[in-house]
Length: 503
RNA sequence: GGUCCAUUCGUCUAGUGGCUAGGACGUCAGGUUUUCAUCCUGGUAACAGGGGUUCGAUUCCCCUAUGGACUACCA
Image 1 (cartoon, rainbow, N blue to C red):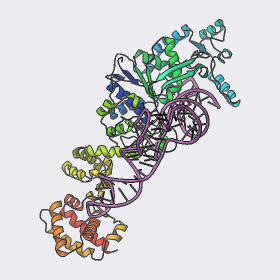
Image 2 (image 1 turned 90 degrees about the vertical axis):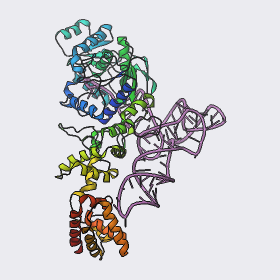
Image 3 (image 1 turned 45 degrees about the vertical axis):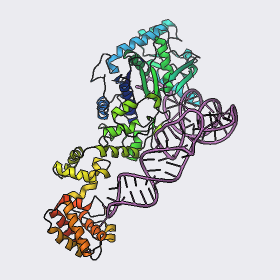
Image 4 (image 1 turned 30 degrees about the vertical axis):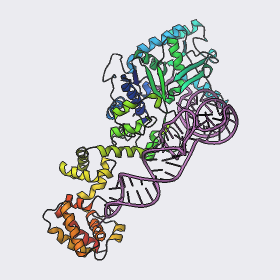
């Protein structure tokens, strides 16, 4: 196989959708697996849709995901410029080559004229197609006398350059994922290659750019499949060998049907973008929602691809190692937020307590609590396995930092008995006398005390938990009191007895 | 409407003519946990339908249905 060079080529029109991230990921995995080069190219040939900040967002997103760009705007490279608007003149030259060859032509029809032809056709239940059948009736350098269209050109009338699609020809091509596909050119139209604003359209620009950049494999979304016949024809007209193509299946919304969109995320409460999008109509991101980038990537990689083994957890290196295009599925995948959560849980379990404690400390600070990192590490160890996100640590440990101000009613009803105050008073005296107030010594002392007096362990422990936590939840109770310390424990017993005895 | 693509448990998927159709998430049940969660064990659940081809089809072919993408001087 020739030198592998692949590109991810988004247009900077807004935040990068996770479908786009997956396309980038598969390109990246393919490049790394085959010792190739991963290129980031910005396709900004639509000046009207350009959005400030989108380029940076794209680069930052890839960086967060751990997708390393080899050639691009920031990285440089020998095949630049990597932003298409910086190559306007070059694209124009290639459009001219096609016109000179007779495979493309100038067209002067205005957008308004085309629009009315389309709506007329629609009224008649048909579709207007600018093709071999229709182009003679339109205003272009094929239908008009040469003197006339040259005159238009000289006078500076706006025009576009269209591809001259053959009238009736079977175009056959191969997709790495879908196999052979044949389309007849009669169903295709004379696509605009070069716009009146001096910019190429996607169709022309990406063909030329892929050629200049020596792209070996085009791995892109399924939405491009219908225009692949045109692209194949362009390669033919230029006399170039086309690269290999792989069209990735779409990412579908979790419920119902259709392509995953920003609206689905808003509606169902999960992000559709990797990072928070801070401009205009803002959108939340996986990073800010507390997902780990490696968990996010792991989840995304398995949406539409699988290695054929039963392995679920993959590091980026493992993904690179096992990736291959022919194990990419053909059908669209529905995105499942629940599974994304599960992946994060798995990854959190493998994070070190120190790392988690550091992250949790920042979060704690925003709530006005402080503790040294060693103590927080101990706390993290106590609740780690019950959480999926760092932010969950707080909801599992809030009572470590503050005494309960309310007591769960159902729990009180079930566990607060008439003799609870008396038992807890006894317990308090017992704890007061313990010098080494650690989880283990407190546990030992209390166990001996209950056995000696023949008390019901369950009744005591549940009432005890109630005054310490405020409800029936949380880690091993002795770990809790060991962490909050003797003084706080005694205070909470007092408070609990006072408040709950009034019930 | 036209063109193209797709179709295995609720979801992600394995499977390439002969299997009790496997795994993961979810869900349900039991166990562990003197609480809750975690965790462990087990269960539930699928080849869209109809024709072929074949000794035999989830697997190959055709049709239907359903879903999706595209159908701009957007990418």
